[in-house]
Length: 275
Image 1: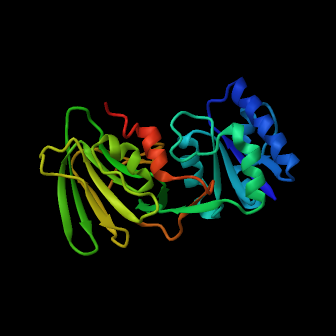
Image 2: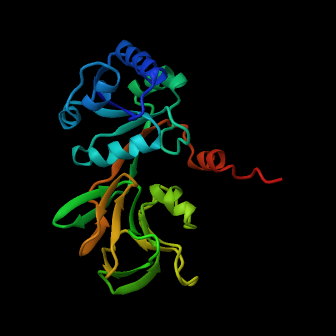
């Protein structure tokens, strides 16, 4: 069995040491360890081209926070490889494996005692190119002083003409990211739907909206300049129309059998802690 590692981009000595400790545990369990070229350079060893690594391994491992896992899920999408997130970050909505428990988890993993969650991915058609978003697609105003009009149509009918600072189109997984801070709903991550949440809308009647995943959505910004942002990590100048639909295949995340999404919400969002 082969595992391909990607580290978070801000590597310090503690993360470097943690990687080598985890690498040793993987190898003791009979799992070959590969690391992508960029991560390898950060810790002073040789690595492998990311795409070649994705082709060569049985699963991918991220060592970092949720942002690292999101980036890998998007970049590795076409290879359809499951991803194991080891949490060396802060929040840990997605990366639920604690480094201290990795040996215990691998023993169960090798016996098949784990689960793979399938998470909806957004496919974006933009300037004759297909992009993929694991968390969200954001259309944001480009100029601080001006709001934007965004026309939104679906394959069934015209939906709305939003006016404000922008619009978030989120997956259920991404509902606890930018969508949540903009006032959108938390949606169970294994459902399939689009969550449309306006950013600082000019009218208070513009509320978050949940659409079924079979809808195809077309968006166009009138006049003003705007930015298209994928997962908060890739930014493009918004020109012309973009088309959004559910991607053909889901992202696959490896989790402990014991993982409970509502426990994660209670822990990370401090639910039930009110006095």
